[in-house]
Length: 166
Image (tube, rainbow, N blue to C red; front, side):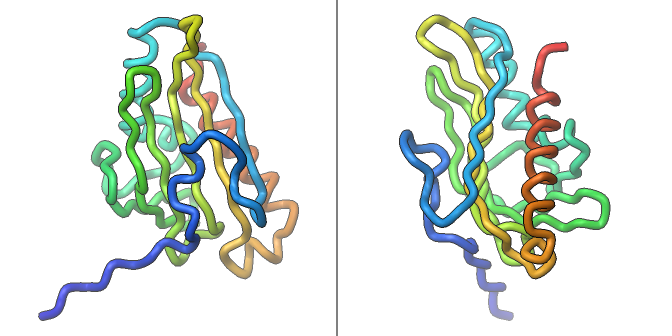
């Protein structure tokens, strides 16, 4: 029996959401953040939540498999009847930055990458930041046009709210 070939990402700019600077041209860009608090404990607590898929689950998505984020892992997010296959392309564990980026696989409604990062500024402020680039990846997202972007922004707000202090 031959092993199943690994499915390729649907874009080529792997890791671009984690780099400083401009996101790749030819995509819609998204960059949102919310302040979580300050200090090392806040950074570590929020970073652990991000690496446990808490933003996705808090936004109403299910994650399969449900293990903590692992670089190279293929996961399927589900929202209602929508199946959203992704691959974790990078995991970041730095003194002032914890998080990950995932990229789209065949069957994902979009084509691109999204990063979920908890960062600490020099003044100690801790932020949860979501950075993404995307374009329609399926016929129905192309057909939905601007409505698909509205949905993406709504889900992003839910991600941010899932980790925000009450």
